[in-house]
Image (cartoon, rainbow, N blue to C red; front, side, top):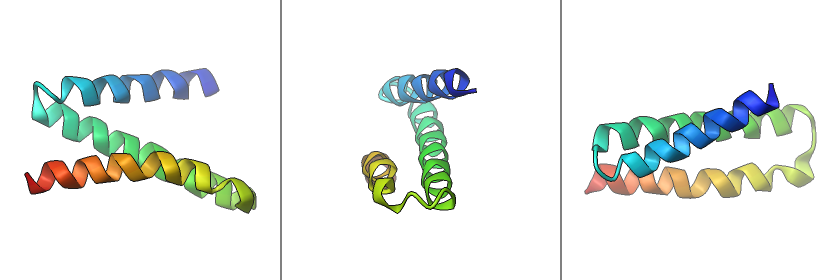
Length: 73
């Protein structure tokens, strides 16, 4: 299951790079990454591992910022 999630994350990251040329693909990949990292935050909180919740949030921040900047442009 973890390997499947890692492959999916790599595909979403590749989608962000492809989105430089086809904007719709980049937006969809960004949404996929936001959902992935939001799920990671929820999982960490449900596991009551509050000390490590900052790590998925650090990965989530730049993706949200990129989506917002792309939307404003």
